[in-house]
Length: 508
Image 1 (cartoon, rainbow, N blue to C red):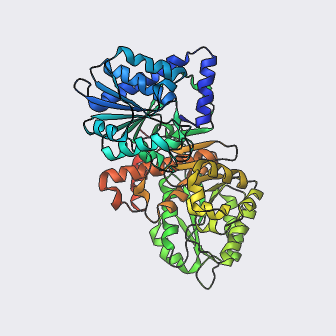
Image 2: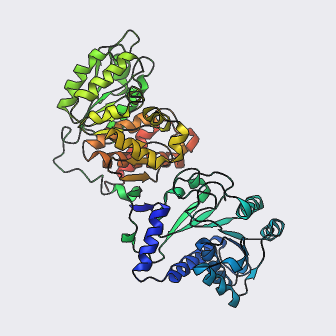
Image 3: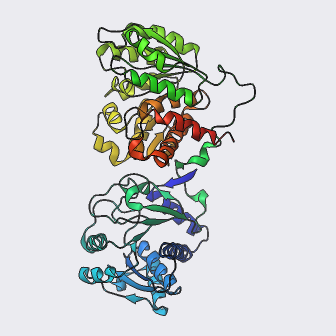
């Protein structure tokens, strides 16, 4: 997995590298040359190309100056536009600016109208204004420069992070650069992976500038397809249906039977050997034909066709004899359903995956979940997590990593926060971001499929690994479908075929 650093962690790694004997100018030189190589690749060559490098007064600006010198040496016509008086530059940035004296680069004083004119004929603009430590809203000359860059329509290569994006959260408080690509130094940054920063960053290129990875101390990592290979090992020749995962799923109600079908099907496609679906008695005949491989059992229900609290003892008995329980999709939100959920969470002694209406039953009572000593995996979207923690959805999305960790610590559970990008956190502070999925999964029922998948994998590996592995598999299945039928046309049941296709990759 790739490490994902906060701005503070990356600054500490930079400082540690310098303390170990790596010259700071060497770091800046490597960063600038890496930028230059990326620029040449974006333009498919250098001779005859025109590049404008817009630089701030910090180290990002220094990287931009080195980039300009490198590009000039490769036949590129470079114009450097510092937004601050070059006489005020200090340290490595001043050293980098001095490199321009022996090149053909032109330096132009910043004026919005002049920058607009320069960008009109540019093949590329390099955004070297602000770094990952930026927070808040851009003001003054940098803000003017960002506005001109945006209005120009010229392709942008950003240094470390698009100017205007918070390097920790990905949030934007004012004008921000829309980059076609971003070259980031040493490690991924959270602000490049979370919205809206992820969309503004374009293609993210991580470059090694000589900071040893052991100096990048972080609990956040990014999982991709290759990381699944170690999780989804081939089954042994002696595997049988009771050895590869026995799951109980409590889901569905009158009018919501699809939730039970999709959860059970997701579990089976993710490899569960036996699945028992518990549903309110009146809908058993509707659910059973849709999941013929599962055991489908009707239990006590309310007059509205939802689970009655009295059904909890029956479901608990089944769950405690098997390996995991998935609870919540489509079960409704009555007081009796709430009692049903609480009884199960109190008495079930195997891992529980809690989703949807199961989470709603505990709105505002996150700490209630901490009473469970057995593993629990929560799979909320931002709205469900906001209700659980008694906060606004905007607050959740303003810092998805921090809030997911907060929820994991408050509940003692593994938290899988759905969305782009999916964040999986555990109480220790360990976090995995999932580099798979996207808007093709924005359709009803895909979360129900994921619930079953998490439960299936939780019978074969620890909860944290089960959560991020299922999310990655789910996202890859969505990407496969988007490539074959188009993202807008994907429906939840399509995932069942695609999950099998993705899992097949790990069996060959």
